[in-house]
Amino acid sequence: MLFTSPDLDDHELQVLSEIEDMKRRLRHQLHEPRRWYGSLRRLSIARAIQGSNSIEGYDANLEDAAAVAVGEEPTDADQETRAALKGYRDAMTYVLQLAEDEEFVYSSQVIKSLHFMMTNYDLRNRPGRWRAGAVYVRNDETGQIVYEGADLDQVPSLMAELAEMLNGPCEQRIVLASMAHLNLVMIHPFRDGNGRMARCLQSLVLARGGVLAPVFMSIEEYLGRNTQKYYDVLAEVGRGSWHPESSARPWVRFTLTAHLRQARTMLVRVREAERLWVSIEQLIRERGFPDRVMPLLFDAAFGLRVRNATYRAALEDAGDEPISEQTASRDLQRLVAAELLVPAGEKRGRFYAGSPELTRLRREIVASRNPRDESDPFEVVRGR
Image (cartoon, rainbow, N blue to C red):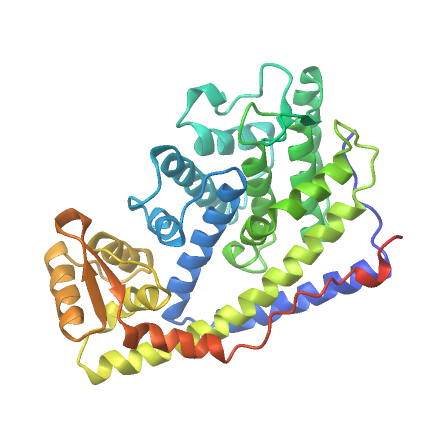
């Protein structure tokens, strides 16, 4: 027996409808090919990688996550964090491929494969294999056990049941993805990486919907920003151990709220990305720079430090013509001379930050932003 989705009440259906409307608006705005799309997509992937791993204590800044997203080495992250970021990127890359596989079916082996990609940097994690014994979640501060996973002898059958559920009919993709996340994290089938795997599986279920590019539907960033609320609702539903008879309604409402708020954030980012791109484009054309420097300056305007390697990797990730290291160096030197970038560091540690003129463009856009809507869509029905 697994946790089952509650029948959605009118209020939940209303919130779900609002989310679907925002997804349609996002799809419309992202449908036309725009050059800024690649940069926005890359930063969205980076935020998802950063958010999901931060929940597990792997803290990395956005520029390191952005470097990992295009296959480059991060600058500041320690070795273990680098490995965790890369593992999550590999698993999510596989998810994006599976999203378009017409012959795809969910199975225990698919879930094990994703876990292997995510955790194979440490064989003590038993990558790609179910755990060998009981598993406990402890409060890091007190050492107290706050959750115990399902009995070991139940794990194979429960995971097979989860795969069967995901292969069945689907009326509400967001709710199905939410329940996949809840069931995996409550079964806790692996020795380590259960939270990351649950979030990755949720992204896979969303991606299989095919309505919107999965990087723009992900809620990993939101969960990373609201980690304590995430833990609190899991504790409320989980009740300390495997209790699939518990109501999943608090969890479903939490994830619907997450989707609603993240969709609002993405709509703002899409509009602002286009405005920023147009502003940078005008700037470089006035000064005679080629269009290829656009992704580089876009990142720098966001406050990210950029490097020769990440410049070249971002171009390839966007499908642009690759350039040599020498050409990239000349571009960077010209941008410094034009006072659009500010250099720092030496030799292999060399990086570039946006100049005051460049970063001002984004600050002005952000300053005109409407206040963020952080209202609770279920506040009026609390206590039901």
